[in-house]
Image (cartoon, rainbow over all chains, first blue to last red; front, side, top):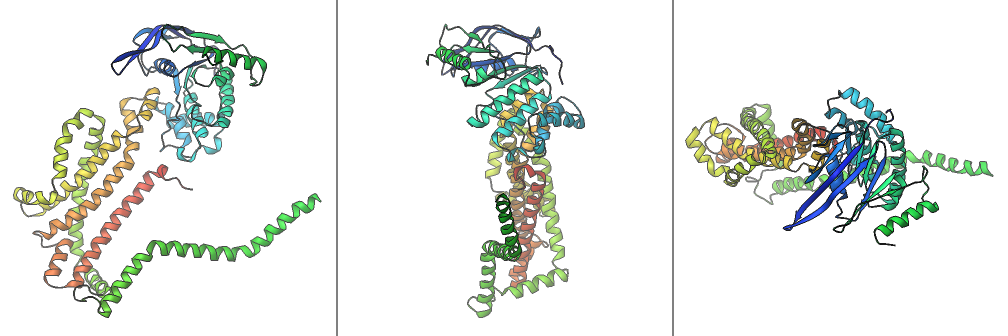
Length: 254
Length: 282
C-alpha cells in the first residue's frame, strides 16, 4: 500500500515545556534533543509526570512547546498536519457512526468523497480484523475492538508518522498482548514511523527499535536504548528479559 | 463408539424440538401476557375501578360519570363534529407556538453552546425569564398583544422556548472535548467539527428539550384557552364545567391526554429513527 522511504523523519531540537501547577512552574521537558528516523518505531517510557504524553502532544501539534523546535522532514511543525495521525488511549469513536463510518471519518474530513473514503476504510477495517463488524455501532464493540477501529481510522489517512498515546493502556492483559502483536504487524506492513508512549516496559521492548526514557528528576538526562532483537520478538527469550531488567534498572526498580 | 457419541445428542435435540414448539409457544405467550399485565395492569384496574365506583354509586356519578358516558360524549363530539373545530384551533395554536419555539431555540441554542461569550452574556437574562412563570406574564402579553390569538400563541411560545433553548445549549456544551480534539487531529475545520461532531452529539439532548417543550406547550395551551377564549379544547373543559356537561368535560380532558401521548410518542419515534446508535438493536 505504501512505498518504502517515504519520509516521516522527525527532528526535535532543544525542546522545553513547563506547566504551572498551584503557582509553581513544573518543567516536564528540558531541552530535549532527538532525531526519529524514517520508518522506525520509537517508544517513549518514563515515570508519570515525566512529560511523555506532553512530548507526544507537541509532536501531534495539539500543544505548543515553550521553546525549541520540532521539524518533520525538514518542515517546522506548527499545529496538526496531514502527515501525522494520532491514536489516543481511548478509541474516541463517534457513537452515531458505524465502524466503517468512523474509519472513513478522517478521510471524509479531509475532503475525500464519501464513496472513495469508505472504500479505503473497508480495506483498513479488514486489516484490523473487523470486516464482519463494519456496520456495527461503537456501543456494540468490546474495548479491544473499539481501539482497533481507532487504529484503522488513523491508518486510513495513510500518515507518515503514527503517534500513539498509551493506545493499549485501558485494555486487559490478554487483549493487550494480542494487540501488541497486531501493532507490530501493522507497523511492518504499513512502513510508517511510529512514536508511541507507554508505561508498559514489556510492550516497549516488544515493539521498539529504540526506547526513549524520559527522566523524572531535575537535571536528569533522557536516555535512548537500542533494542537489538530480531522480529517477531519472543517475550521469554533471555535477551528480551535482559532488556527488561535494564529498563527496570533505569527506573531504579531492580 | 464415536458415532454413537455423535448420534446421541442429535437424537436428543430432535426429540426435544418435536415437543418444543407447543411448549415454547405457551411459554412465550405466557411471558407476553405477564409483560402486558405488568405494564398495563394498574391502568386497566384504575379504569375498571372508576367504572364500577361510578355505576354502583360509591362516588357521585354527576361529578365522576361512568366511563361509558364519557366515551359516548367523546364519540358524539368527534363523530358529530362539534369537538373537531376545537381540536383544530387548539392544534393550530400549540403547533404555531411550538414551531416558532423550535425555529428560534434550536439555532440560538446551537450558537450559544458554540460561542462562550454569547452564552455568558445571555445566560442571566434567560435565567430570569425562565424562572418567571409564563402564566404570570400572560396578563402582560394580553395587555401588549390583545386578547386574540397572538397573545395565546405568544404565551405558549414563551413557555416552550426555554426548555428547548437550555437543553440545546447544554447538549452542545457537553459534547465530549476528546471527540472534538480527535476531529481536530484529522484537520477538520470549525464548520466540519460542528456539522460532523457537535450537531449529532447534541441531538439526544435536543430531543429531551423537544419532549419537555411539547408537554409545556399543551399545558400552556389549556391555561391560555381557559382565559378569554371561545373555542379550543381548554375552553371546552371550562365551558362544559360551567354548563354542568360533566361527560363532555371529561371527553375534552381525554382528548388532551390523547394529544399529549401522541405528541410524546411521535417525538420518541422520531428520536429512535435519528439516534439508532444510542439504543442499539439486539
